[in-house]
Length: 290
Image (tube, rainbow, N blue to C red; front, side, top):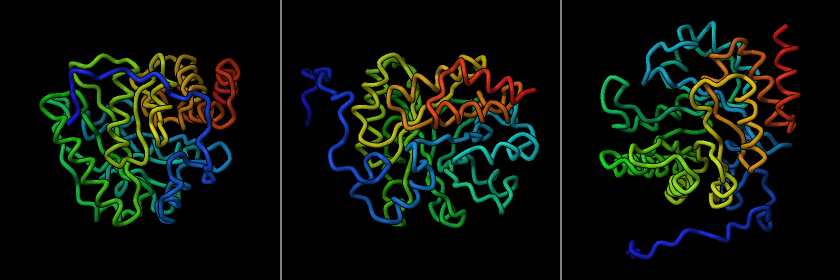
């Protein structure tokens, strides 16, 4: 049992020091089996080592929020530009064409909505992930939230147990606890907790000092887009994150609520995979929009 009276902040993060003897292009996967690596390779680009994930799982919490009123009209045209699609089983089955070959990260927990207390989630059956031929499962973890921290970490561990049986990676999605500050110390803690419990990918939020969050997490970290930002600010967010070591983005509202979602996701791709600077990326967005 750790002595909670003597917890010292980490100092030696080894920022900028490469992981020794890593031959596989995805962080933390060197000792994994073939099936797990194969699925991760479907998500993360072999050349850049990064991924542009398109998140449209918001409906299970928010219903038909702006940009998600019609998945067939608003999301399907974006799928060709995404490296991975993150959605719920109902939407994948009903609205994403089965001929789409993009890997799917399945939202694998469900629970309360915005009308009640958030984050009171439970897992869906892992057999549904197998039936949907997914590349990964996504499970939320509410670190720092007294009511749901234990149950959501248990959900993650249970999903990892199932994932290991079938070589399906699990993405731990960090929710911000009500009593926690949105800073590098919190996100480093939440991300590390996900990795310690077996997550192969962590989705979290960008913040000042993000390079420490990435450095202390032994698996790929992708950033959430969060609330809708002006296009240039969203592109700056992407650029800063990948420069700090993020393995990509899992964006939703900053793409599908953009004034031109198709142009926006292509601009995000240029930042993530080509290290395009925000000024160039916003010019690309404007050119594509025309």
